[in-house]
Image (cartoon, rainbow, N blue to C red; front, side, top):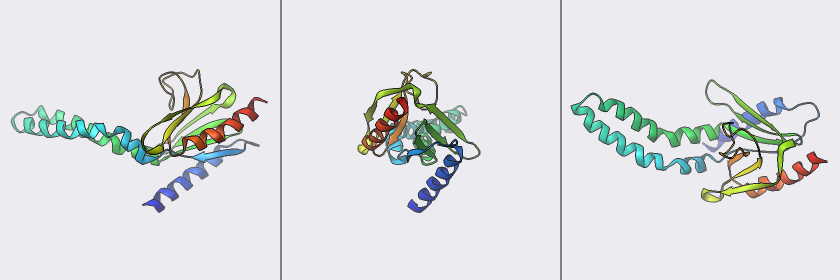
Length: 177
């Protein structure tokens, strides 16, 4: 399992390196922790499984219960889907921009944010198991991928948020020179 995840991350890293511009240097490369993303969404299991069971009982007597079962199964699948997406995502920081590459089945999403709008100091939001989110570019549209409700872009659910912030600080300082 670990070997498969490592080879998946290596393939993502190669895809990401192909996206780098001429003279663009890679400063940091990492990705979200799939276990942390699963734990964060675990309450959906507590909702989805009982919902599916109750809807299954209703489905025995009335066909409309099938719709409820589908909804409950979708809720219960949420943590697994989120963890799978995290396992297929890689983050990169270059001397010019931050990049997020996600390669789910049949698709590819590349998000690139210029460091020109970077905050002076990254914001760390700690979560489960020592993981955390590092937010470092402000004033983006809140609906943009990998931004929070305030429009702050960052790397979500990284295993070592302090290490990411430490890599970010000199990259931001050097970019502003």
